Length: 117
Image 1 (cartoon, one colour):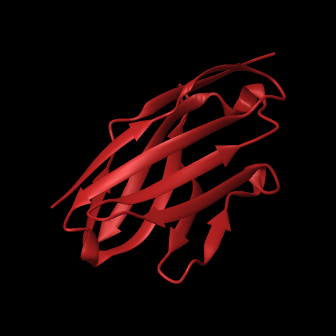
Image 2 (cartoon, one colour):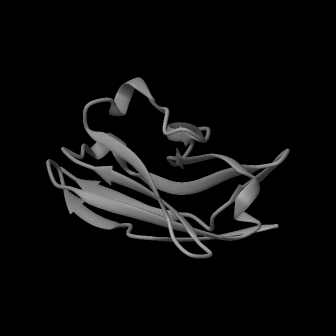
């Protein structure tokens, strides 16, 4: 089992920045992939960015050059961050931390990001 706790959402003006954090605890040694998804009202959940073991990253085309995903290891915790710069109103969504550990998907509770124009 892996537990995820997210933080860092909020309201920001267009052009601003936010940093999302996700702390993973539990069976962290079997984590293969960490990532962030988002879901806007009336839309499907979509992959924003992910990082796999070894540090390889990938991004949705809509956020390339503006968002950066990173990972840090603590004593019994693994952190995944999403630095979001040059935010646009279309980035408004609930952002979810996602971890693939073994063959299972784990999801955070979601954090709201609202970008005003």
